[in-house]
Length: 279
Image (tube, rainbow, N blue to C red; front, side, top):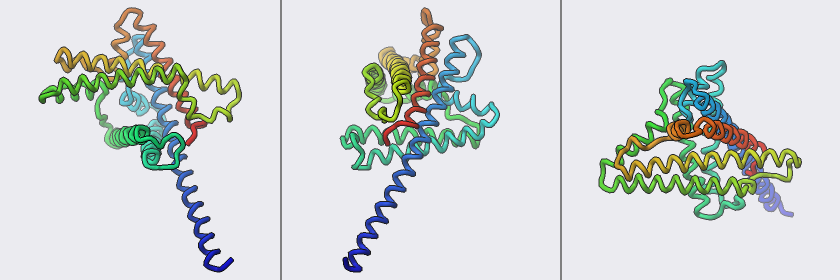
């Protein structure tokens, strides 16, 4: 082998190692992101349970979760972990949107979904950082939903836009429910690395968590659609308002406890993704 050939071969090996190290670093950030998501959903589940038990509590959404963390010992450390986690998840999702060698992620729809989720986590990282530094939140999901609906309805075609978004939430919620019931989420997990008992537990929390998220998302979509039909932006609700609407319904506290368990289950499932997700 000539000197030039050896140099070229060595360069390729070094380049391959650099790419592998970069990939491993991004994947690690993704796993931290799943852990951060799990913490937030556990907190939202806890807040939801407190609402079901008729206790005064924070908003049952990410803003409420941040406020709950901020008031606890070591809360500042946890908040910064969430910032790093959300930023890491945003970077990982962005890589999923542009990397051509990810199994099952080559379709345009899958890449577009990853890109959209990356933007959502960028917002989550930014708002969490702003809350940590300034102590001011960006507002609850109820306020965001009402403000969006109010602003949209001031323009021509705004009601159609709000209605379309509502229908989108309903469809997305239905997809999550079906995904949970049919256990489609399991294709992203390295189930071969789990024991039989562990696999059953992971699938159970995955089903419960995805179905709970789907029900809440679909219900929020129904409120948006209702706001568009009645031309009343105040009928729109975010996650917290949707959960509190469940509490006001017949057998509401029981339903809300079920939702709290489901949200906490999704938090646990997020930890499982941090451990066994194929990245």
